[in-house]
Image (cartoon, rainbow, N blue to C red):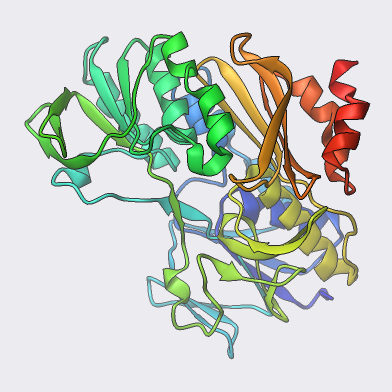
Length: 406
């Protein structure tokens, strides 16, 4: 348990790190808190970057979480534009790129993820969308090209689809280049990815699957994307949405267990006074189907992590109850939502709507037990069915109850 004499150091000033600071104060912790972030911006929410800000609905400042008033209320020392490069567990000190060190009694690792880079000739000139700096750079590039220009998006996953939607709204011609046979097939499975396949063309966005890219070359001012079959595509800008990697390199010599993230236990602890939360944490997740080690890049997971760790450290008590991951994506004029963390090879049955209607609800199941819910533009039906993940529910019972029909 924390005492007023303790100093909590949080590395990572993104959503998870900031929510943890706020949760500490809500729980009544009165000691020192230092929040370290490598970006120069005060903590902000990332989902609006591709959903509202790029399209022009929001000013970037509207996504700020740590306003001056909230920073004052949180009584936190903010070290922004400061990169952590090492951790000494014995001395409980974080080493900074400047050579300085920060010592604490408790440490939270909330360094999140970064956009995966691909190896192309024009790599340094290609855009990603993971941070405010990324958004600013992309917006500046788009301001320099004419409406109707082709913009190539490498990767048709969640970010690729959301950015393509924003570009289309702004009058550009996005072309989505997906390496797999269908976007999201490895995330959502064969059936669900098939139901989503038509969304891009329904709004006039070109989606090309099975695209094997050899290189992207700058021609100044345009770019040429060359494919394995010898064809090519000229684009005024190229954006890469190829997934994300956890930011753990700075912990390589720390002695912590790293395995596609920082490995933590059921209580999010990597050591007695060291924890990891949010996208960077590989944690033990308990669900209706048992416990498994996972790393989940969801906004809601980071939010729950922050609240649960703060409660544990301040009160000494664990918050009970299963955590049900929640994810949403606004793409091609539709809202895709998911509850749970089903595997792509789980069985899936559509129980409401159809792809032709442009709205539907489906249930995933494993060994006959509901493992997840996914919906397209059916938010009420999805949330009415959430209780199927609060306790083990057979698929037969769920279909018989059919709360989405009410």
